[in-house]
Amino acid sequence: MASRPETFPQQTAETSPLVLGLDIGTTTITCLAWEPVSGQVVVAGTVDNQTQTTSSMGRERGHSEWDSQQMLEMAYRCLADVVAQLGPRSRDVVGLGLTGQQHGVVVVDEELVPLTPFIGWRDQRGNEPLAEGGRSTVDEMLTRLGDDASERLGCRPATGYLGTTLYWMQRTSCLPPQGKACFIVDLFAAVLTGSAVQTDPTNAGGSGLLNLANRQWDAQALELLEIERRWLPDICEAPTPAGGLNDRSAALTNLPRGLPVMVGIGDNQAAFLGSVADRSESILVNVGTGGQVAMYSDEVLTVPLLETRPFPGTGNLLVHAGLCGGRSYAALELFFREVGTQILGVDKVTPCYSTMLDAAEQVADGSGGVVCSPFFTGTRSDPHLRASWSGLSPENLTPGHLTRALLEGMARAFAGSGRLIFETTGRNATRVVGAGNGLRENRLLASLVADAFDLPMVVARYREEAGLGAALVAATGVGICEDLQTASQAVKFN
Image (tube, rainbow, N blue to C red):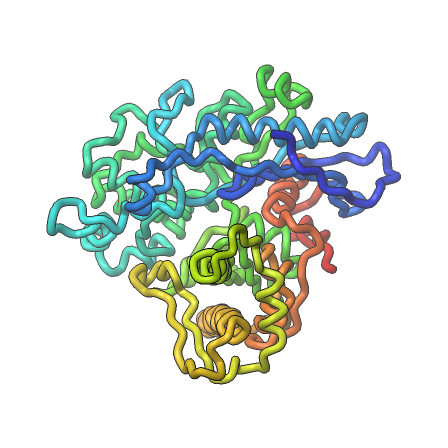
């Protein structure tokens, strides 16, 4: 499948260096070429990630399994398509940065051949009982680790995390004994370069097994969970090259052999890098399939409802993750379409997102008394929580009221997360930075979020924030930018 190109302003600095950023996401795989001199994204391309292999029975149980080999082939294709778009300017490419899903796991052998499917971040097997009538994987891990573990690890175990799935594999006797567990982006870096699998603290922090203080695997957690250190990759801080592009990868991408390929970073941190120009004054609200609220801190701060995630190079992000996002809006949209087919007998109902938005904008603030809790699939702290609408009457039981109440509920949730982060850090932000298509394509939600925070909102110019963040890592790793903070100051806003 060919990538979908995006068009950007024509560049005139023909000899300026370029860096590439590649994001291996759940829905799409995206690559872009960034020109540090002008701060412009020159070309970008995207392919749909259609590599999920979960069986119908697995889907019913909430499993999420993917073909990692196919995913890497699509990543190669996306890289090659962007290089083709660059034409003669491909000679100006001096580095490649990587990012991707910072949760999930695939186990590979010494030759980097997958021994398991890639089990993604949405996978729910960590919430299943390990034995009939027994505790879940997450509950058993919490008991073993103890109440104080999150102060060292920055987060509690959650289903879909590398550490949780690895523990589940071990307890269910399906962990390949000689395998190495890794994130998908780390596997791609190793395949691109022929180097050993290695990871960055930003990804390792998404496993639930990283010690925040020393930014290495937490020896106490590994011992308590009976996870052997040899099952995990070495940790290497970005921006550091994982290696140079090997012969096979050079041939597949039409990039030069030996091109520096950076150690991959987590997609949440990459999106922050690619969205936030001033990390000391901004709070990020990123709305895609899910939602995250994040703020930078020089300190290691931990509170129960927040995750503390290592930031590339130094510092941390305080993150409230697993919030409602695009999937909540999509659930309501699907309901409306099913009313059309099942109740009204319409043969083919087209997507109605724009119609929903138009109807919601006709409803006044407060949604006529309708209040929505938009957590259709729960939260990380309460996976059993479900969505609800209250305050319904014959007068306000309309698509517009239901839609606006959902969006207002999302905005309240994000602002509540922001207040918790402000209380934890002891400082406020001067603006909200919006990222993700959930805010870009829903003008009402963006307005409601800004109002809920009572702060002005800016939105980063380029859609693929995580890919841009990966490119900033590459620019720093090859010495074009002094450091990542300097690199991120090149971020532009609409």
